[in-house]
Image 1 (spheres, rainbow, N blue to C red):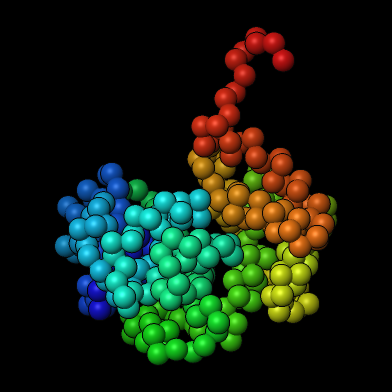
Image 2 (cartoon, helix red, strand yellow):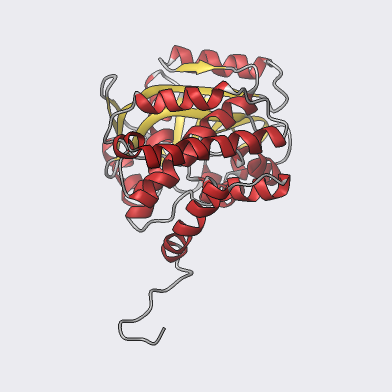
Length: 318
């Protein structure tokens, strides 16, 4: 099977690497020093489940040179999805399946708007992994599993086949009864973690333990529960308690990718996480005061990272 990984970061690199060492024809789309390292040294994955190296890995920065493929794993950040959707169009043939692996609940619709209906699944990854230098991915924890499904939740031949391909490559893959519920349950978990972690500049272990910030965490989850239900997503009441219980099992020094990006001054997924809660809440008439606060507090840092906001000069009038 011909597979392209569009965005060879922590998520795309890990799962694409697993497929490559299982014998599939995988092309990694990457840029800069990361691309050069993959071409010259292969893609190295350091994993809590065992390290591996994809030797002689196929890598390119030009998707047009790849041609149509069977499957595209989309591993870019959420804010890069619209641009990526346009760039990957030469790889999309009549039967190509596009599997987005972003955090959030809007990636599939953005990809479908650019590529057209019939190609894009709903998908999510459960893994803690990141780019650890050119040509190197580090998988630090998490189930390292995937969940995906058709937008209408039919168990089609292509999703069953895709699950088999991943499982034969040693990756746990699930086809949920309702992919939208699965996406929103992860969204309910990750968006408050990212926003609160970035605002407090604290790891999970700190803000889950303090009563004041733990209360913020639960409020943020409940706001997403309410927004999701208003959008007719069948979220169960127990989603919040399960998410909080999961948070309590995580390593105390853990942080989210959004938090790390914001604190490092890089563009982040703020708009797709806390910003999306605010937008969708307004559309549905659901108050989201906690996410309003998180989004508004972090927006100046995000704008500065995107180059749309300059810091005032020292001594300049205010």
